[in-house]
Length: 145
Image 1 (spheres, rainbow, N blue to C red):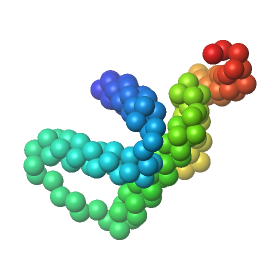
Image 2 (cartoon, rainbow, N blue to C red; image 1 turned 135 degrees about the vertical axis):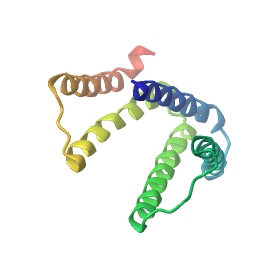
Image 3 (cartoon, helix red, strand yellow; image 1 turned 120 degrees about the vertical axis):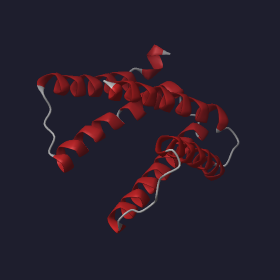
């Protein structure tokens, strides 16, 4: 059940982060903004790792693991770059939140394709409802606000 607490905290943290970027991004270079946030991410995770491992940790990863870390870092950078560009282009926070929620669909698809995960009926209904809500919110965005 601890994983559920971590998942909820992760969602809350991501929501705060995405909302803060909307307010900060006005007039700031997206590359500078991402460099600063990446620096603070590094500090936070380094401190978390030190606390979790009680100072006894090593960075011994295989070559494949380092490649995966590099790919994940690049994917995160590209994702944030386009997110900041969307905010600079004055995208609505409500629209971007729904759009970012669509990443759940890609996560499910990747899980099915790469990890051979199976969805039960309830999970499938949740994915379908998520897609339908995304479509409805983007179609009727002007009438809702």
